[in-house]
Length: 325
Image (cartoon, rainbow, N blue to C red):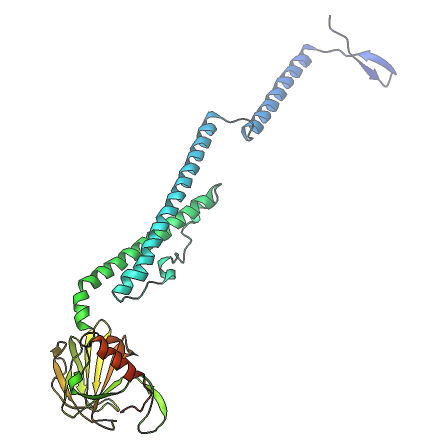
């Protein structure tokens, strides 16, 4: 027999029994079932969105993500090894290959330059592992660019290697006047006393004194760029374009033996010693340009001088005497 429940009646000031009808029982039962269902559903949603319980799909997804993270870790370790190898190739390229073939080293900034402008990795942002993925993508892009730059550099080295024989023949490497024809080597590259102003100024070439009419020889293969007297101070002079950035200049000539546009080879007679232009006596003023910059000709006399002759020339060139022009 069920227990009778009572309620307090404030009007009669007495307890009166609660009469529960079948309708009330059904509604209470339905309410209980609905509340239980909602509570259970709410609890299930909380569990599904927490780390306490995972569905089979989530478990499989987590394993897949862990596998991807492992693969990315392995990939980054391999990238580190590849970067080390590429760095070694770049170092040899700059300090060995390009030096040997007289090519300018490729700057570090050019080899590892990033990609400006639009954010290339925007579509990779907003994920739990975005930093890992973006960092790996950047390393791959930079490594790809390094590979392209290095490939182009090796293509250039290959071209330079094929032209090495031409380069060796073109470089001005002999003395423009034979030793037997020299009176003396009057002045070298560096600060010297100007014969006209008697002031100290930089002398950008070497002066070889010799009798008027002594032959002057092309110091390397090339093409006659100029053979005229239209350059201030040089008088009658010749310029030979040897290619590879080299140009040699021969000044104060008495006459020419070549014309503009003519091809010459090392050892060909191109003109004769004279005293034209800004000169105090018969001599040859000789200069070498590399990429439009005047450099010391003394570094190029390895083609026709013995070690003893070269040492004597070096000692004479060091003397701070008066130049001839």
